Length: 242
Image 1 (cartoon, rainbow, N blue to C red):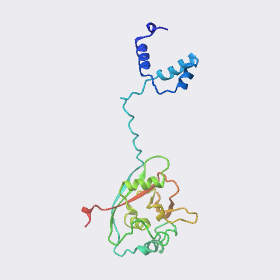
Image 2: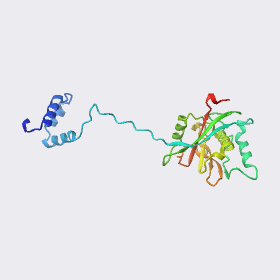
Image 3: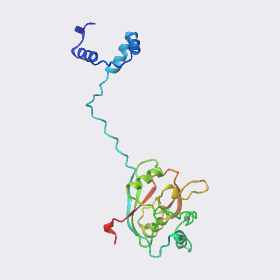
Image 4: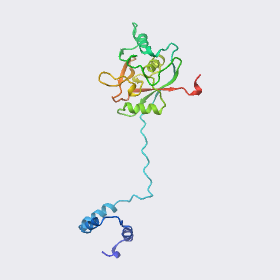
């Protein structure tokens, strides 16, 4: 077929291919192509030139937007660690205060949530400490991991106050908590108590929709769902500290 039978656009492209044909192709590859059937060459050319090219001036695809997985459930304001607070006996005193009388605060209580199993949270509270506390809920369907929740807390500037911090939320803010959620106080995995199966347990309590409370322990290695809220403890801004 002569150049006269080609359209102007086809002629222009064939001339560009000839002018810019890569010189780096190995000789044996060129020989193989030269020996290939005409139909094979035609089919391969059609694969390449039958679609729009990706040009150097094409705009790069925008980066994928991160998926927001958690949103504010409730802002609980400020909690204050009581003047008589003793970190070493905090959990024993809490259980005595809420479970020793005829009218118990918790319908169920996990005795493994004690001072011996949880002695060393990342932040050890002191009497008079004031903290901002919020609860966040999962806003995507399905499940999230403990690692995702810890990453989210880090992005919020959270501190980890362990089961001890959880007791102050219950004592001071339980009436403000939306019902139907489990509220967890996360910490670094190595600071959580490993049970007999080497599962690291996360201090939490359930606030059931019927009004009952359950003091319990979640599992760091297990996934979490939409009814599992995460508590976020933060230091007060310096300007707010009395």
